Every structure is written in structure tokens, then in C-alpha cells.
Length: 240
View 1: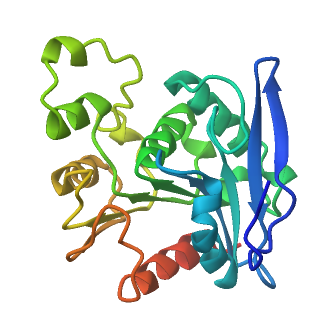
View 2: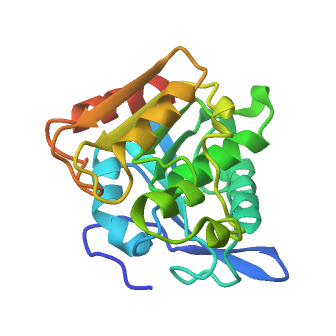
């Protein structure tokens, strides 16, 4: 796998969860002593290599990053589906200490980007309350795939009803019982801002914050004026 020259990344690991799939995981160690560890779930556009600049920024801030590729992406094999990806995320969460230095999975912070927000929320819904991570960051979350289909296409309800992978994050939002940060661009051309606000409103935890990044597109929320808020959240809740 070709990796950016400036990214200090351990050799990507191929993890065989079952006889049907091997999952590629990037383990990116922090520069110096780790201040926190993120379990990162990327969006559906592109692959892990396209997030290399983000991983480098997190690494420079002193954060470990553990990121898996979805089935059929970035070298992982198998067929992607909602149950399979959720299972892979759960396996990685439970075995995180094998790849980064953490005392327990509960020391992790989940980071979900676009589609990855649904993966993070689905993972949380699988975890007992005493085994949940220390916090979760949701970048441009959506309420469900059917809601997205209605928002961006004119496909009929009859076809929408046949969608199998629904990623219904709004119905799972009661799993957001940990400190939660939602980041959403006001000019997001992919995921309507109202969906991010709906997820935020439904999150039951009192310690939550919504950052509306003025004028930012779907992939443009990582800006100089917003990054301090992100670093602050990670260091506050992810510190060893």
C-alpha cells in the first residue's frame, strides 16, 4: 500500500475477522507521548489514504489514530453491509489495545466522518453502558440512508422502502450517552445541516456540543478557526 511520505504510520495490518473477510487497519502512533487515542471511521468517498493529511494532523497533536477500512475498500476484502461493517467495528474496538497503547477500549474516542458517523453510532448501540468509549465526535452526521435518499434524489418511496442498509442513526441516537461533539458545515452540499441538528437534539447526554461551521462544505469543516474546539474535546475526554 502506498503511503504519504510525511505520515509516520505503522505497516497497515490485515486482520482476519472471519473466513470471509480480511480487514485493513491503519495504526498511526502519536508523535511523542500520546495524549489521546481516536478510533476513526471514514466517509464513503475515497479511502484511508485520502485521510492521510488528517491523520498526520492528529498525529502531530499527540493523538494515536486507529482506522479501519470498510469491506471492499482500501485493500479490505469481503462484501460491505451494515451488519458486517458494524461487526468489524466492534471487533476492532474490543481489540484496540492490540494495536495502540490504551488501558481499555473505554479510553478511546470515536470519530465518525459522514458515513462513519453511522458506523460509530451503530457501534455504540452494541456496547453495554459500562463498556462505552470516553467520547464521540460526529462530523456531518445524517439521520438515515432513506432520509438521505429523499433529501438528495427524487427516487420513489417504493424504491426507498427496499433499501437494506438503512443506517438509521436517529433511531439509535439514544446510544449517545457519552460526551458528544457534532461538527457540521452550514453549506454542506451532501448532508443537510438539519440532520446533524436532529442527531444532536436526540443525543441524551447533557455534555454535548454542536459546532456549526459557517460557510463550510461537506468536507470543509477542518478549518483553522474550528480545530481548537476539536483538539480541546479530544484532550479533555481522551487524556489517559
